[in-house]
Image: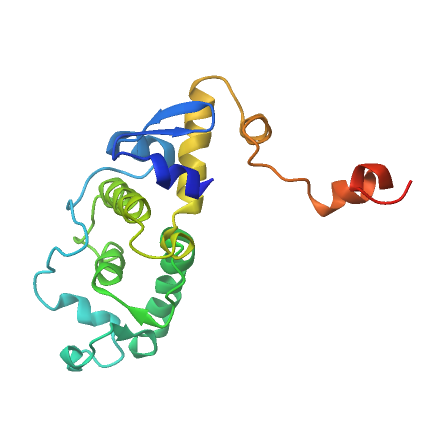
Length: 194
């Protein structure tokens, strides 16, 4: 479903299966219950100061030497665990060995007086993902992320129109029969001998 979302999202509206959804910062905030307060920040914007170096085991470390990102092993363990959660469950991108600028900014959200507007960030991240998929900049499967966020947004929209997730999946052919369901059907339905 993420692929379907990314192929048609124009930055505001998307058509997923038989529904049309308007995705805004406000909608993301409501669906996720994340506040829309804090700095409106997105990738390639700078980070003021070096306060973020509190995440490092050695805050005096020269980080300029790292060309591909800062190795996650240089982080204090409590921040390394949070970084892994952000990478696996918020970004869903699979780049676990390194911390990039946007990871730093997301981690800073958990420090006092450094909150960022997460719905704003997530909306812009969805836009970037969709643009990359539509331009076919790289292999589509490597460009897809935010699977959980997209599910939350679709479920939120479905609730608003009185529909539910399970029927949406089946009606739009996103749902495949699970192995348990295949085991319950007879051989003729599996395509086997009669």
